[in-house]
Amino acid sequence: THIFSDKYLLEKIKGIFFIPTKYRIYSSFFGKEINHNAAFNLLKNEYSSLGIPVYNLTSILKEESLKRLKNNEFVFWRDDTHWNPIGIEISMNEVKKHIIDNK
Image (cartoon, rainbow, N blue to C red; front, side):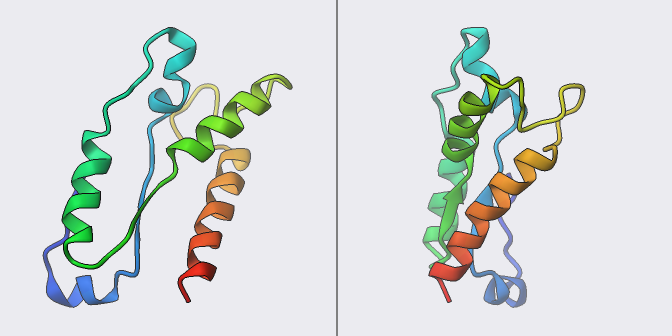
């Protein structure tokens, strides 16, 4: 988690997206639900004080991962920690909603 401090850069930021890890999304399947939001809260608190909204992609990715698991589909590559095309589409549709809402 990084907080930018460069004023020139901060003027250009319209919003920040918290991108959860693969483990955060699938942790409930291992009986280790991640309930702490320290990283997200840090981003939200720091950027909110600068008037920059922070959006959390965790819930949408968790919801979709549960739905898609029934069809043996995943939002991350099975052998990697990056989004696959399904995860990318879900996340970018959510980002698109926030961009359109904040024009």
